[in-house]
Structure formats: structure tokens, C-alpha cells
Picture 1 (cartoon, one colour):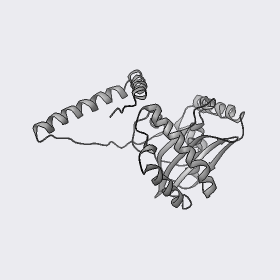
Picture 2 (cartoon, rainbow, N blue to C red):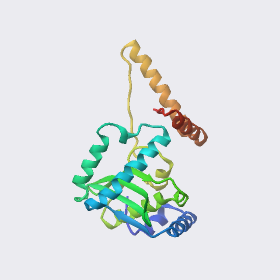
Picture 3 (cartoon, rainbow, N blue to C red):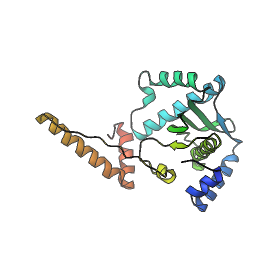
Length: 223
């Protein structure tokens, strides 16, 4: 849940050393130009941020070796149309951290019924990446949510480590497979084995890093 000021929220969630380190990184970022939080509302702001968000996210997908959604036919057009139609009314939330003239981190998601859905965070890979502009953007987003009556910041699906540091609630998701035919039973056994292996890899930082590097190299998918 979200309540209070940004300082109150950060103090409740993160240690004093973490907060000090992040302030220091943001000061280093500011050495390279004015650090601005840009929330897109006008068409020219959408035109400035949306293509860069897609470019950064596509690079991230490729680096991870997973399917680049923005290369899937119709996906880019859908996100563009939704953004142009619903940014002004606040349903689509498109924003960025600008350092000087450069967009160092961007974000695309939706807001509905006082719930903020965290969907497509991105960041540039350059000499400023070490200063964590994505973390700066996340804090600005928290600040916006606190100021605008958002009750829930929903990190959506995925068990990324950074999400656990912020969340105070989690929702377990389940699925169920059962084979009816002999072929179906074989397929279910294979699927369960694949998922079990994936869970073991995700729980081991060493194995996860190795799997990501292999997946990025071969362009496959770890399902």
C-alpha cells in the first residue's frame, strides 16, 4: 500500500545506507545535466518518449534472449494507439527521467481504480547506467502515486528481486496441468520438469546469471 510522503515511504522500505547511496548516485547523475522527471501528457511529449521507450525495451528483451514483443506484428501499433488515445485521460502512464537532453530511463504502464500497474520499465545502457537512473525514475513514480491518491502500486507478475524489496503483499498464482491421453501425460511430465528446472535456476543467482547469458547468446527462450 501507499501512504504518507516519499521520505516516509522510503524510510519504511529501505535502509539508511541504501537511501544515502541512492542520493549520492542521483547527485552524480546531475553532474551530467539537469535531472528532470517528465510525465507525458501532450502529443509532442509522447512523440519524444514513446519511441525511446520501445527502443530501450527492445534492447532489454534481446539482451535477455527472450522474445522482443515490439518486433511482434501489431504489438508496437497497439501500444502506440493506446498511448495516443489514453495518455491525456491518465489511463496510460508514460514518463521518463531526462538528464540534460538524454532520456536515461522510461516507463509505460496503466493506472485504473487507484491502482498503478507497473508494466514496462526501461533504461538506457551507457556511461550513466552506473548511477541507476531507473531507480531515480521509480522513486519519482512513487512520489507521483503518493501525491495523486494511488492506493496500490502493483508490480504485476514476476519474481524479480527488486520487487521483493518494495512489496508488502504478494499474490500467489497457480496453474494446473493434467494429461488425459498417453501423449498428453508425456507432455505434462515434460512441462512440469521444465518448470521445476526453471524454478531451481531462478533461486540460484549463479545459475540464473549463466542461464541469461546463454539465452541471450542463442536467442532462445527459458520457459
